[in-house]
Image (tube, rainbow, N blue to C red; front, side, top):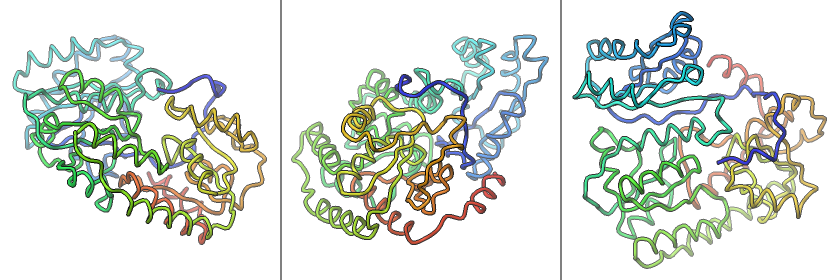
Length: 411
């Protein structure tokens, strides 16, 4: 998943940005099992996302931890939960946190116990462990696996393509919602599902389009369990890669390639107008805005923008080719470890720059900031259009860091 050899392992610095959203499975309920301090963060997140009615907590004490059998509390908590909720959920998702690594809970045994005690209830256990970010199954990867692991093989197939991995819903202006129907396919995503049965119908789609690296393992498991082939096509800002994705989709489906000439011409025009508007303004790209900052930086560089620095915390393996390209061909473009504890001491005079991502902007005290929306997902040509629009707007405004910090403290 990540290349752990590029940056030195040190203490981490965390910028005061807002937390990311989580995908909600319809008609599900999460039982978060952890000490109260851990639960506070998830409660805030659920409250912010108007999802607090779908989250409950089982707070464990020091005594529970020392005794080593806190998992014995979970079945009783589930029974109380089922007796309390006004509507019985179709699935209960039990979240355990990093303290579970120290206690060594047998999740399979726990699921077996719960299924035996509540035979008509569906369960899954999700391990949310922030200290495993550099492991084989980081929290976001594990969440994707558990979400799509709820799907069951039906033996049916229909003309639909799943978007797999997007946290936020796809924006309606995105061209993929025009192109795929033109190929005879409709688009499915968790965010459009209103019921658990609608979510289960994703198992009947003909293709999974993996739009973020975090969902690749989930797609591999869906291939094995459900027989759904997948294309690994994380969101890209490179025109050639976007074209290739649509051609690959057509090839997998066995249909003619779509005509993309109109989208290409419109996007190239928007890129050129933005490049002229920015007038060589220095640009910094970081991973708090995109999973693949080196890929984005390479695209901007190819379009003629003045890229000066790249911030990344943990480089994805799929972003390594562009990282290697920068190291070999553009050593003048600085690569910064966005998690280093001494990052705030960086003596870099780049305040008059445009940062794509909050982490770099906050660290550098940049005047101009692009924060890609957290509550909507853009893909393909439309993602480039959104980025160019925001870059145009950002260079005309100055960041109000006091307002951002106030918002961060509120949450």
